[in-house]
Image (cartoon, rainbow, N blue to C red; front, side, top):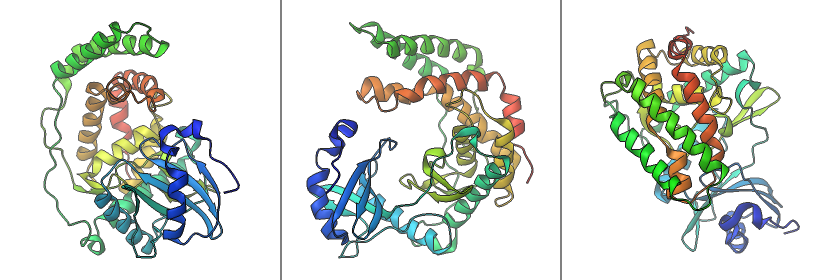
Length: 353
């Protein structure tokens, strides 16, 4: 390779990649590998951009799902490419496999999709609507007859457990106790402790308003699982590709609509852009006629999940994984904003097509 990798930027994820590249290049028939650049924006897997004699590719070290599930998801990706959904068609090895294994490590390869990420309010209202239309197309095609050999059709209600306020309170106390034992607390530890104390106040005040039932309202089907700005590529004002299909599974469709909107148009900015959210929802409902009641239920469930969950702190303190530290405090600010404006948020999700 003519360009070395920066091992400091990717840590243990780069420890094996150089020796694995020799085997991968032969398996996928890439010819000379001229450059291999680590992509730090991938949170759950190892990702690189390869420049080779046969073109540019996105290489993923599959770490977040079992390889059998990755193979199924890659097969779904090929089906979606056939019907014009903007995705990259997976490459296959000389033996016809979409996943190449090297010393127990699984990799997949997709032609490089040009484009950039467009977070939050960078989208125009028309682009926000277009993102909703695309999510609707994804849901329709994932649940189409042509994919039933990969994704069996089913519409059974999906259990959506509702965390009890006492359990959420106890988890906050666990982290506070852990922080209190640290010999050399950092600025992150101090901010996390303040956020946890504020969360306990919110739990006390709003715990009685959590969703009452565990069965979600509305249609259920196969979903992408993580459509948001980190996984959508834009080029010349249009969506050029949707990436990261590791989380395909059956969910209430409203759950993904609510999650996509709140991550794309809120979260890291500390508030939700209600105008763009309404445009996005209207675009989605122009393709999938989901009832307002289903969206309302999904929004309240997501609000309570954010209220009762501490996944970034699980990563930081329980797993000693700091890759998601930067997401915690913005999410806390967003939760406080959302909690004070729940009716306004619900109004945005009732937008008509």
